[in-house]
Every structure is written in C-alpha cells, then in structure tokens.
Image 1 (cartoon, rainbow, N blue to C red):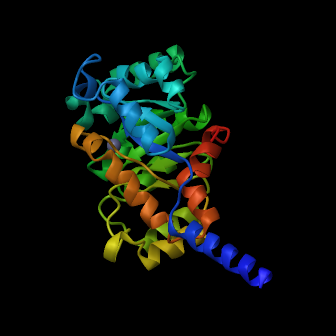
Image 2 (image 1 turned 180 degrees about the vertical axis):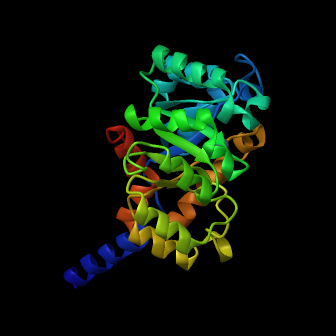
Amino acid sequence: MRRLATFLALSLASALAAAEYTGPIFDAHLHYNEEAWNGREGPHPPADVLARMQRNGVRAIIANSRPNDGSKLLAQIPQTRQAGVTVVPFVRLYRNRADYSNWFRDESIHEMVQAELARGTAAGPFRGIGEFHLYESGNANGPVARKLMVLAEEKQLAVLAHVDDAAVDLLMAHTPTKGAKLRLIWAHTGIGGTPVARVDQMMARYPLLMGELSYRPGLTCEGGRLCPEWRQLFLKYPDRFLLGSDTWVNQRWQSYDDTMKGYRAWLADLPADVARRIAWDNGANLFGLKAPAP
Ligand SMILES: [Zn+2]
C-alpha cells in the first residue's frame, strides 16, 4: 500500500513536471529601443521592462537597441542586477531607421561598431553584433557586411542576423573558416518560413549556427502546441535553439507576458532536459553564464 502511494506520488510529480516548463529563460532577442524609454520616462522605463522580465523568469537577455544607449542603460543600472537579470550586450548596427537598409555598405557603421567594441558597457565587453537585417540576400556581399563577419569570427563575437537562408550561406562564406567558427544566431530561424528540412541541413553544415525562434512560422500548431516536425528537429539538435521576445516595437513589450507564456506552453511538449536547454542552457553556454540562483 505504502509502495503504491509512493508510486502514485512520483507519477503525479512527473506528470506535473511535464505539464509546464518552470525554469529560467534566456531571452536571446531583446531590443530596448529609444521609443520604449525616451531617455528614462517613455511608456516602458527600465523599472517597467525589468518587472516584465522578472515576473516571467527571464534571467538573462541579449540586449541590443537603436541607438545603443538603451542596452548600455540596462547594463549599467543596479536595478537590473537587483531584478536578477544578466545583460549580454550586443552592438546594434543602427543609429536610426535609415541605417536598416544601408548598413552593409556604410563605412561609418563599421567605424561605429569598432568604437563601441572598444568602449564596451558597464556590464562588460560587447559579446556580439546585431540584430541586423538583410531584406535582399545579395546585400550580404556588401563590403561592410563582409568585414563585420571577419571581425566577428576573429573576435569570437556572436552575430544576430535577421536574414534568409541564402544570406546565411553568404555571410558564413565571408569568414576565414567559411562559417565553421562563426557563432551566428539566426533571428527567427527563417522568418519567411524556410522549410524545416532546409533548417536541418544548415544545422548540420554549420556547427555553431543557432536558431532563435521568435515569429517563426509553422512552429506551433493547434492550441499553441509544438508542431511535430519542429519537435523532431529540437530532439535532433537540442543544443542549437534559443528563445527570444523581439521587442522591436512597444506593442511587443505590452505582450511580453503572453510571449513568454506561449514559450512555456510548448516547451512542455519536450522532454524536460531539452526544454531546459532551449529555454536557458544554450544561451547561457554561448556566453559562459552561470546557472541563476533560484
Ligand atoms: Zn529583432
């Protein structure tokens, strides 16, 4: 009888554990753009965004912002540490909206990146470059895009790239190792819906390619559950995927809770160790972060 009770208790515990991912989250695609805070006031001042991270168990973020002041502020203020959030700062390539469609050929962006890297942040050196966009794959061949990929590989900086699969190939080709040592985080893992078979092929080809999953079409099916072909891909490459909020407009801050709840819901469709890797370990391992205190 006692043995049966123990068995039932253990079964119940494992059923509950499978019901929800409750561990820490590494938000690998976060923007703190100027319209969010407008020099501290704004609709989403630091206290607001940090509260959103804290109540969702987000314990580390890749912070990048247009301009870079937003990331630097989060890296600097003591409230960030008090909220239990570690900032991994990236240099954004955009000073303003016009830079979105010109950065890959604008030498002044290359200079800005080098100046920012030399300066660093209060939370330590910049650890990556991006997010940047390429709306036409061929622009990955622009002179500044080429130079920045070489710089990233040589300095072991991660790259957060919102591009299509053809542009990933081009960016990888520009590095000295042809991408073997480039830590490229593929924002949205193909926002245009790159077929899963093609994503699989790219994961096999580039050992350090990571897929960030915000806005990824076809990821979730009926009721917000994980679609079967994605579940299979995560089981095949459990160390290669990351979660992100992509707070590119203020509306994404307003729905930050829902974004994170959505992730926690489908993470429950994976074995607990795989869920934990996608939610936290993969990001933490990329940048050598320790497990957060509970
Ligand atoms: Zn973004």
